[in-house]
Image (tube, rainbow, N blue to C red; front, top):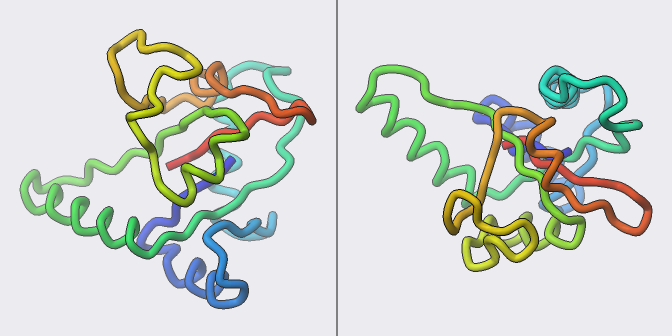
Length: 148
């Protein structure tokens, strides 16, 4: 389970990045960001025994993506005069995690594992349970989801 930082979380992400110069870092269970991601995941799984445990909650920080996101979000807010931000899940194979972290979502790889039921693209869901259907466990039987 991974989360991209919001504007409010940027300072914490900058501290984590400056400490180890990495895009991906584990969140401590006492942090607000950890609790937020965990709550969103558990609330939207909506089914007992649909997963056995959460192994880690990581935070992704990519300065370029954060800037693009903030410009786009602020533009939408100015145009629509309301907040349109939503937190969405993306389920994927373990092998895809590092590529998504480094390069983002790539529509060229859309449909390679799960087809293109609704057309070629990258899919997200407001439900962790729905997104979980599209995860592919690794050799350790771990599945990965992103909360964006």
